[in-house]
Image 1 (tube, rainbow, N blue to C red):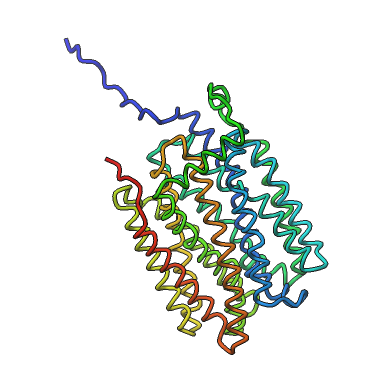
Image 2 (cartoon, rainbow, N blue to C red):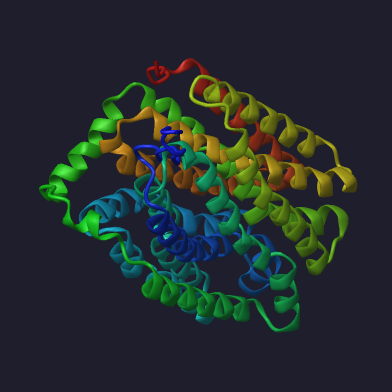
Length: 421
């Protein structure tokens, strides 16, 4: 008689959640991703709204850069506070408390009668959107298997990037048919829907709430953020984070529309079409690089090489005044922008689990302060170049290329985190 035991299903990995919990986590992550999508829409409106805003408020290139940066300065500066909020109050309460500011800011922008009020609206939007992607990364780190972090983060970035589709052809068409103010009203309504979806669907698992962990004070939380800055490898990570995504958003979110309209006499809708294609292609980048992630032993080399490649593309883009290059270049840059997911995985692997949420917050803060700084700086560069008789977009794109090259160099020479065994 055969007494052999019947085959059994291999045990799940130790850190793998039950299937039912995983399904619930996917539903909640999808709801959280809707706020990421609206955040992506808000941060890229300037590329399509630039021309009508310049006409209505008589804005210089420098003022336009400040308008675009007004979203990213508060967005980046609030990351530390959002990280503490997530640690002390959870993902759900943090995003539900902050996101109404984005709805209010969009309404303020739509009603703006002056440049100052318009910038104030952008500041409110930036503050409201500040926790959008951070809550997703912390949620993924807590509720998905560690080995799937890069892939799930990449998928989240890709889905969140759908928000940029709204600020391509659809926004251009809406502005031409109505006005730029209607664009802000539509985004406010969509943001309210996203808030409602998060309120209805996101409920953090019970085990997170019942874990017996002493609640730290805000002062202790800030002290732990300071600990991150004492680690030598933090500085290289902050440098590279401040230039990679910033280059993509500065192009897609600010300069693409004005460049195509002024260099090649594209219409607003034609420029919107290019922005739409760039946005669609950019959706595939994060999932692609999430799957191609070479692992901790080679990931930093990939990040350095891809940053150098991006710098070279911006340099070509700057000095080749060809309509074909100016249309195809942004599309290629949009795909390469997906390597941001490798940077998130780099941060995830560089710090112990107890510091993961704070490390993500500091990384995201540097990333979006980098966006704000690059948009402000390129606005200044464009104004100076125009005043001296140079083509402003050549100066803008060349300065972005130089910043990327410098970031790659510093990331290479600054201390790296200890290699895993």
